[in-house]
Image (tube, rainbow, N blue to C red; front, side):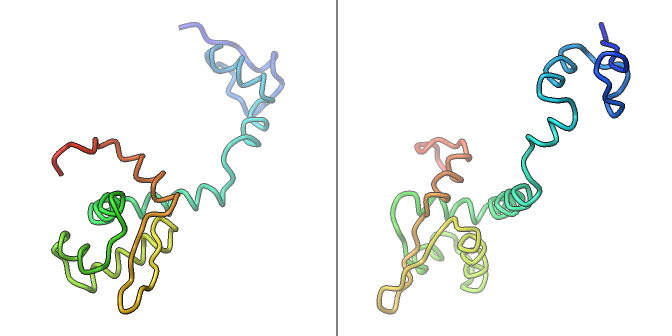
Length: 134
C-alpha cells in the first residue's frame, strides 16, 4: 500500500507522518485537521442526536411510532396493542414526546397522540417495509 509522507508536504504536525494519499489529499483541500474539525457536527448537535437515537432504541417506542404513522390514536388503543401497563406506556409516551417525535392533544377526556414531522422522519430511518408482518 502506498502511503503519503505528510510531515514536509502539509505542515500540520497533528497529522501522522505517513497516511494514505486518498486520505491526505482530500483532507488538505478542506484545511487539514483544523478544517475537518470546523466542519464536523457541533457538540450540542451530537448530544441532541444521541438523545434522539436513545429514544428510538426501544422496540415499544418504534412500535408506537409505527402505529401512529397510520392515524392518530388514544392511549387506550396504544396500550391494548402493546399489551403493557399504563405506567409503562406513560413512560414511553413521555420519552417520545420529550424528544418531539409525537404530540398529544386533549380532546375532552382523551389525549390523542400523533406523529410530528420529526417523528415521521425518525420512523423513515427504520427500513421495515409497510407490508412486512410485524
